[in-house]
Image (cartoon, rainbow, N blue to C red):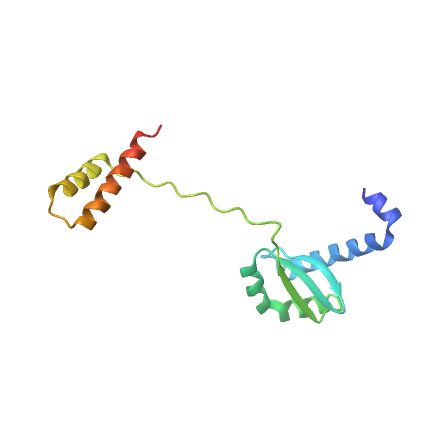
Length: 139
């Protein structure tokens, strides 16, 4: 496919090569962040950032990136960051909760039944006990 692109659309091939070199230089300047160059037009470089929060933080590094790219021979006076919404980071797996011991659940049920608590607290305790007993019955 690359050979086809090289033969049929040489300007697209040259643009791809240029952006690839630019991406490698960005990685050299700021290796901790995966930045993907999208477009270089009128000395303004458009780069994707992993998230919108990261794009906001990277604006602080714009002078460093511009200086680094200019030192490598790129005609860049400004860098704009666009959040990458295509490749979203995988959220961490949910933490497994430790089950409430059955003895504690029974103690809460006894407290709710004792009549020594307010009606609001009794309702909350009963809901808690019912929910915890439901967890114990699930396969």
